[in-house]
Length: 452
Image (cartoon, rainbow, N blue to C red; front, side, top):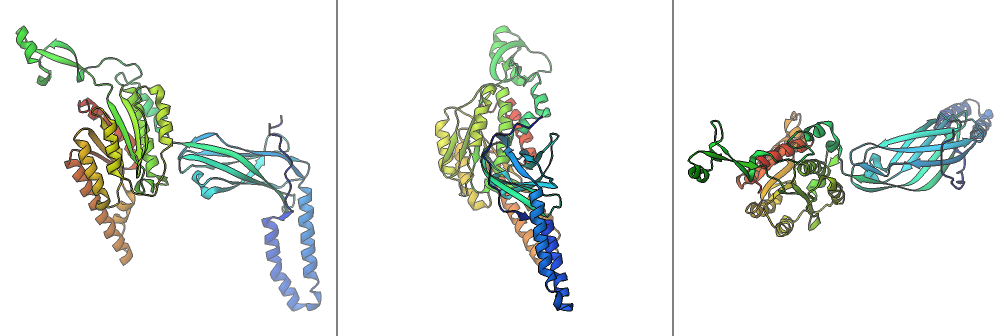
């Protein structure tokens, strides 16, 4: 069964090229030729003769490699940042004896690997077909192009090779990482009776009145309805329905500090993945979710989404958040956000800062936001600072770096403490724990009846 490859116009072959093996042979023969010329000058003709023989072998070997028929590169249309994506090259050859087939790709650097990949193709189960795959791991969101590909195949001796290249119109759309949403742990958690797919009334929690029941020992005394008890000359307790339809806003600082990498991926992408996971849980819990992104000016603000079936809208909006190298304007961004919110909401802000001076405007703006809304500040712990602090001071440079890192860590703690004193809830954790801690904190806030 033949592979289904597109019918492409015959690509012109480049001039026959020597392989790495031929280059090593030539390099190894050079000192031998010098020795021969020094010991027996009369036999100098042997060196150019050997070079001609090697050149003829290269040409002959490349001729025995045959010709390439149809070949193409295949890639997924969609992938996720930080998740493996396979770029596959398929090639058909007609006649000849092939010892090795290699492929090379040029692509957008956001796919990782420095924007270039080289890999080997191996014989396919079908005769005369070869296939090879390069596993790339996207490092940034957006649309990545794969504009050009090269195919090289060597003859039976491995001395001469033929090569072709072609332009491609392949592109990959790189979305935020949703692997935590698809994880078995989260899906099992969402099947719980209280947070599952079937919405039902939950008594005993929340602020919305549901019913009165006769007070029994062991009930929370704060639930006693004294007016109803006075009318009936018995103690009655209120049963409330769990809060639903709360407004949750996930706000993203897209400034310079959030675009710096942590464990190979920008902080903003780590934050987006955690936020989408928590937003999915919030939608399943009956709340309404919106995304807000900003740098020097607001980038994105989505309408509130109240149905888990519209989760793709949040994913698309998160994918459009851009990377910037400027400092964010917290005053403009948070003032814009406040003006758009008509009722008390839970605002979850993902941000980072490098020094107290840069954080001063953020603190001032959050102080005004706390007066009307509930604010949760989320930041990724700086593991690099901790490594510098714990490093053994082997020399003066290492000692100076450790002292500087310790100073920055203390300044960071001071800023976070100031936020807590203002009434801002704070989460600081490693990137791989942010999502789960955020979900836990969301349920704590929801059950404490603090949003509505």
